Length: 466
Image (cartoon, rainbow, N blue to C red; front, side):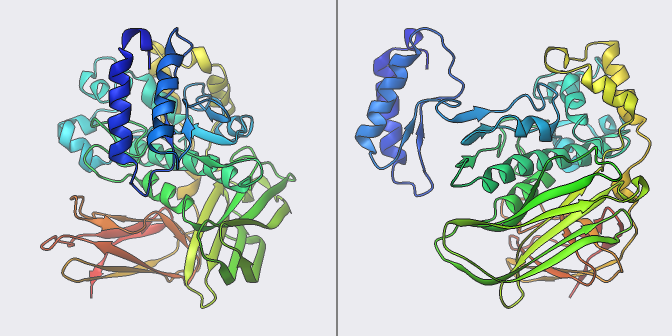
């Protein structure tokens, strides 16, 4: 709010009408006077006025004059600054992380709504790719390049690679900060807001649900991370673990509901790159009061040879007393095969140097295209089976891992994207022998033919209808 350029009576009218219109919504938790308000002259008059009207017409909720301010931060050292996701996040502790995240590309189906199909054959984009640049959030080649340093899970040589890896990195960025905050809930932290949920224009952005209402893979990661009852791990770093080093992580269970969690069970397994168990533990009889967090355990494991930890994985799951899955997470480490040359290139381009004009953009795309491998796609193969049962307006998808190894990043593709369609979960892991039932909603007449199911270490199959 810049009061010298806005009549205070206009602000008064707008705030009064807005508060009276929205104050009875049950999802409203607080009022905010603005976003990243600078120190420009006159801002306080508008903010003070907004605060007085919020307190006057809705005294039941707090007023936060602007964000960041008063115990909240926005972390843009990640992405804009080019700093490592894990180290930069841990270096910025705050009661509230009010804005953070990494952008990603929309799904292929959405791209075809704003770009011609032949454009999907043009990768990497160049300075002459005006159509692509018009749908990047800052209208520049630096947008995808700045994302790739966080999504280098393998060679990025086409738009499909970039879609998958950018959405993966977006989900990981949301999860890491969220779980840092949840691990400190009630003591050092109170919450998080990732940026952002949905979009005002079609294209590359921070949204997890795009302009057309289509969820990205990062939407499901954000949903899994934010389950009211959840088990999760927090750890020092994602990459750069070495043979002989001691891997450490803390395990937590959150119960952010109004009811106690009683006699639950939990499981945690640390796997090497061939799915040999490096450590595992099961926990029974877990009881947590309403609106409480508990520290479940600490992991401390000496890592084996380098060939056995490129990558390595941690799985955690929480089950009700009767065995039903409540929540689960799969984490991967050393999953980005960056060379020393690429790491040096990234370290040379941070903050004000995290810009890629002209020939520098060409160099950046070449470096990520020439990554040596895709570690997560070279894990031992397992096998999935799946069936779908559809009723008039919904149904279930049943997935089972019948192979000898965990199934990593199990993804359902081809689900309808209309406004009346909803898939309850996606992009998850399965232990050997584990079965998952995923509910869905779909408008009458929606065809489910052609839905496929696959993972990063499984073949893709077509779902059979039962």
